[in-house]
Every structure is written in C-alpha cells, then in structure tokens.
Length: 193
Image (cartoon, rainbow, N blue to C red; front, side, top):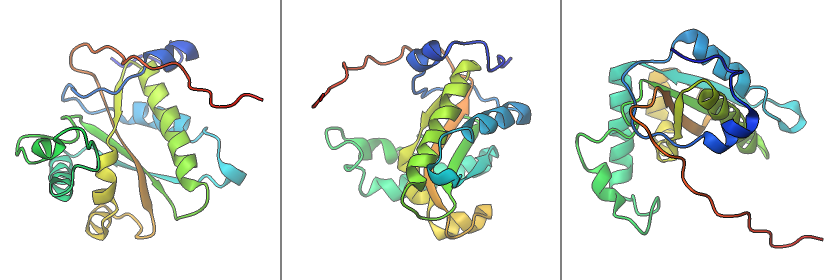
C-alpha cells in the first residue's frame, strides 16, 4: 500500500531518499503516478516555460526491450560512466536489467532544446523523487539510458516527438528489501563573501 504523500516532513524526505536498485515486481498505479507527476510540475521553471513532458513505461516487454537497447548502446563504451570501474562487464550480462526490474519507468523529456530546459526538467525530477520517497516508494535515475531514449527509433516506437530530449529517466517502485542511504560529504564552500 502506498502512503499518502503528506506523511513525511521535508527534512525526512531529503535526508531519507536514496537510489534504490532492487524492486518488487508490482507496477505503480495510475493515481499514485498522477500524484507524482503533479508534484513534478510544481518545480521551479525558468520564465515559466514548463518545458517537461512525461513518458510512462510499465509494459514489461517494452521495459526489457529498452533495457537491452541501453545495454547495447553502452556495452561498447561504458568507461565514460564509471572510469574507475569495469562497468562494461555489467552491461554485457544478458540477465542484467538496467531498470533493476522496476515495474515503472518515468522519463522526463524536454519539449525542445533551450537554455534552461534541462535544469527545469531535473528540478521536476527531484520533486518526483522526493514525493515518491514520502509515499514509501523507491526511485533511481538511470542516466545511462538517456542516449538510447534519444534515438529516433525509440522515439518512434513510443510516439515521442523527434525534437523531444530525454533528460531524466527515473525508475519508480516498491523497494525489495532494505537499503541504507549513502553517506554524503560535508558541503564544500569554495568562496563565501
């Protein structure tokens, strides 16, 4: 059961949110997704342009095809993701799912290129992820999927306008098992006038 969105303080949402990489197989219901999208579009937006569009993928076969396409795109050049790790090994594993078996993928697309559209879309992404956490759901940005999601063939398959730009692919779902938020370093202030 998903919790109401207003069950958590903002401080607890910010401090407790973490990237989830193991999901129960259930999909997120439409009313919960609607609440997350409503929270997302409350994000700040430069000059009130609201440049975001959303694509929801919940079809298991479509998620698998997308995962395979992302892996194929990244298998040849995964070192740019984590130069200190051998991430190409992960992407070459046939059973690895880049969406960690989550039943729901929310992709925030920018309607078109512009000066602040990517920043606006990331602000919407943070609202969505904090709201999901407050509802007892897990999220994880799958940034490595953006290149594949921007391919014309993928856009055509999902009916996405060709000028749209995939900015923030986010998986959402019920976490499987317990995880602990990662430790963060103290803020690094380089100047304070």
